[in-house]
Length: 310
Ligand code: UT7
Image (cartoon, rainbow, N blue to C red; front, side):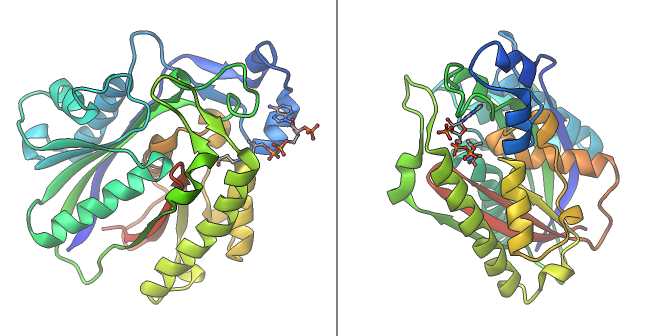
């Protein structure tokens, strides 16, 4: 069974914090942030918005594009690491927002690898024959856990949600994936229940530029493909320099790496589905395209997969 992405959707809060705004909050400069990260602005949730409301909106848009309703969906998977509430989980809150269904709904927390993790879970359910249609949402309000006095982290993160309606289809190809976690390095990026994000920026940077090319090469070799066979690399949007470095290491054309980080910053598990929705709506993907998706972040977790667009 292959995964068909029937529809995508996203939702970004209206409120924006620009680099100039951050200059008034911490000792930083617009030019430093742009040069070192590629980020110019990030969206920030209002008091009325949360992971569930943004996720519900993104899910509605993905269902609409799929010409489906929630009644067509067998399961709801939500990737998030910034839910305000411990209970109920965000997936059940999104289910409530969509209404009219009692299908299983649960959250996944593997930070910026969350959407990738949800895709591999979907692949396993599809190939076990258990479910045929799964709604996957990545949603974050990182602004609630970011320390706006720490210039090393507050410049990076933003809020938003992305969603995809996935369907199991008979096909000659199957998604190929690899997921890893290195808990021993977990101290590099943490956030306690009552605290804010703490990050060893250099440490995470080095981990990403080393491990992401490795895991992408791993899935390429599993699929007996080379980078030349890949049409698009949809990577977690953590830092433009990280993506540039990965493209160089893979000796691949940077034009195959779409980016939206300038406008939205790093949205953890929402980064990949929001970017996917953006390029899908711009019609930059065509049937038969081979797309690498790759996420990396707290855990430390990382992973990649190759999907063939149905
Ligand atoms: O989602 C996955 C998780 N996160 C990531 O992937 C993030 C990975 N790391 C990064 O993206 C980068 O490490 C950062 C963007 C966080 C930092 O960039 P860097 O090039 O690694 O800077 P640095 O930490 O090595 O700091 C270089 C200098 C330091 O000053 P000195 O010691 O050289 O005088 C910092 O204090 O830049 C200073 N600095 C800043 N200056 C202006 C650090 N943050 C800022 C800032 N504005 N916001």
